Amino acid sequence: MTHRHAVVLGGSMAGLLTARVLTEHFERVTIVERDEVEGDWSAESVEHAVRRGVPQGRHAHGLLAAGLNVVEGLFPGAARELAAAGVPVGDVLGNVRFCANGYRLKQAPIGMEALSFSRPYLEAYVRAKVFARPGVTVRGGTDVVGVEADAARTRVTGARIQARGGDPEVLGADLVVDATGRGSRAPRWLAELGYEQPREERLHVDLAYVSRRYRVDPALLDGDIAIIIGPSAAAPRGGAVMLQEGGRAVITLFGILGDHAPLDDAGYRAYAKRLPLPYVSDIIEASEPLEDEAVKFRYPGSTRYRYDRLRRFPLGFVVLGDAMCSFNPMYGQGMSVAGVEALKLGESLARGGELDALRFFRAVRPVVDIPWQIATGGDAALPGVDGPRDARTRMVNRYTNRYMDRLYATAAHDEVVSLAFSRVTNLLDPPTALLRPGIARRVLGRRRPATV
Ligand SMILES: Cc1cc2nc3c(=O)[nH]c(=O)nc-3n(C[C@H](O)[C@H](O)[C@H](O)COP(=O)(O)OP(=O)(O)OC[C@H]3O[C@@H](n4cnc5c(N)ncnc54)[C@H](O)[C@@H]3O)c2cc1C
Image (cartoon, rainbow, N blue to C red; front, side, top):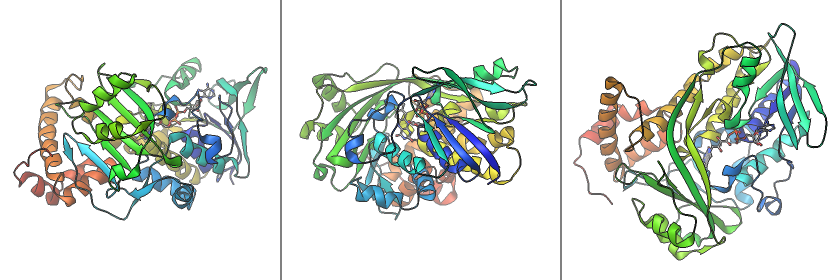
């Protein structure tokens, strides 16, 4: 134990996973969270527990293989424990039906597990485990209003917080971690301390998730635990069915650039019928909705703050999770990337001495670059999305899109290609793995099969 007190701002997935990592390096870790939060993950306590601070919790949330590896590493036995509590478990390729560009990708067991849960349940599990760690304190129902710095403004010395109905107070800390999500005010705090703000990169997609919970007979999924239909250029809308703990399922429909699913029953069902493939709509038609209307979450676009490009940064402060980079949720990356960032923070602290935040931001650059490239590259291939404008990038994108069209078509029949693609989308391999000779030969050597 080399440091005394760390304060984590925000108690969602990024904050919790980070707090877990920090318990190995700090005597005390305090999590400050606006919502009242409990350390109980029993199914009854979580039943309808979508928190105000995490409204996306109502919608389909998948944990990629890279993210499950992090969770298992930090909480050994987590998958077994969650499965024993009723969370559907299956093989990451064998039991997750993934459809891209109008093709259903070939499924085959690869011996790696996937879980299908409600977002509040996963978070409650992680929260209970973190809260039970020695040295962890939780300040629920408490707003973070700013950071404190020393007179020279070279070091952040704590967080300014205010409990609901209480007086403002300062929580002193050796390290303050901002994990307050997309609405992070860290860029403003930096400016107030006289630092340059990180440049913001953004790709506008005007996405909406529209979700409804159902009671679904698992037999309808034919052995799968989740079905995901990604958008295609011809039909840029998608949907997902995810079985969950408690015998429920969430069904999410998503569309971009204002093509949003209606909330009423008839409109919702009609929208689902026009997805590139029928699997989601078939399940909707055969299942009992648990709510009269669907709920909507609007997501303007992926946003990345380039902390890795800054030249000056105060000591004792760091930013991660959605506060650093928020990815279009269609690619299911946010929680997994936050988990890998938390591990990287642990690695930086393990070097001993003072945390060098700029070095940390550069160390996580590749961790963010790859999912960012997948999400923004995928979005830019959709009609109407305003991708990069320069001629060279557009030409590269045109070739990439053609190659990917062929790859999806091949992956519908070819297990090797389907597995390679799945490893990339699960953040186990970089996208360049799809260009390896063994894959490229299979992709380019085949005639295009008909859409399933
Ligand atoms: C519709 C949708 C679907 C998604 N689907 C997936 C998916 O399938 N897979 C996946 O991995 N990711 C998905 N994500 C992304 C995922 O939800 C986030 O990446 C993940 O929660 C990590 O975010 P975070 O902890 O950094 O921030 P958030 O989850 O946004 O949490 C921020 C926390 O900080 C608290 N907070 C904020 N401001 C303050 C303040 N001033 N004071 C005190 N507390 C504060 C909030 O209450 C909240 O608890 C999805 C996102 C959306 C919007």
